[in-house]
Every structure is written in structure tokens, then in C-alpha cells.
Image 1 (cartoon, one colour):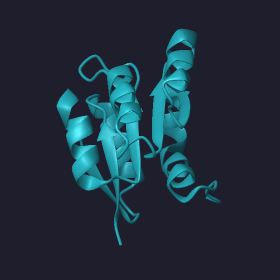
Image 2 (image 1 turned 180 degrees about the vertical axis):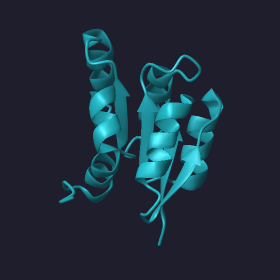
Image 3 (image 1 turned 90 degrees about the horizontal axis):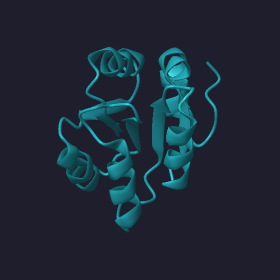
Length: 127
């Protein structure tokens, strides 16, 4: 059975990274192209994980985290976020808004599949 990963990333480089990393897995990718897509698709697809780019200029990840936390149907969905490592305020604000895990852009690029598997299955991947 496929598990859906909702990807709220408009940056083509990082979106492609996610697609490539999850190509040979049982994960199905659902892309959020607009702000409202994040909540609408989270409600309609019941994803196993939501991936957010905290530095995305098109999608407001902070607003999305607030909406997810406020919705009793959605607040338990794990969230994986990435941001520039030097942006301490971004990291702290994301954690305050309930992000499950936040990593640097470099770590996200290098370990996309392992991070997704860790958050979806609840334990670190062995690969």
C-alpha cells in the first residue's frame, strides 16, 4: 500500500530531490502548488508526512504549520521541514509551531529518503 507524502516545496531543485529520493519506494508524492493546497490536500489525502521548505517564498510554511496545529484532523500528521542552518529564529519558530523535525538544507538534500522513512515509520532507516 502506498503512503502519501505531501510536498510543499516550490523550489524545483528540492522538489526533484524528493521525487528522486522516493522513486523506488512505496511513497506516493502529492505536491502542494499553492498555500491553500497544503491544508486541502492534507485533509483529502491523509498524508503520512508533510515536507515543508521554511525558506520558500511562494508557500508560507509558518502559516501552514499554524493551520495544521489548529486543525484536530491534521495536527497529528508528522512534519519534516528544512531551512538554512544559520537561521536560528526560523528553526526556533518552526519548533514552537510543532514541526516534528527540522534539518538544514544540506542534510535534507543528503538524507531525504532516510529522513522520510524515519518520520513515517517512527525509526531511523538502516540504509
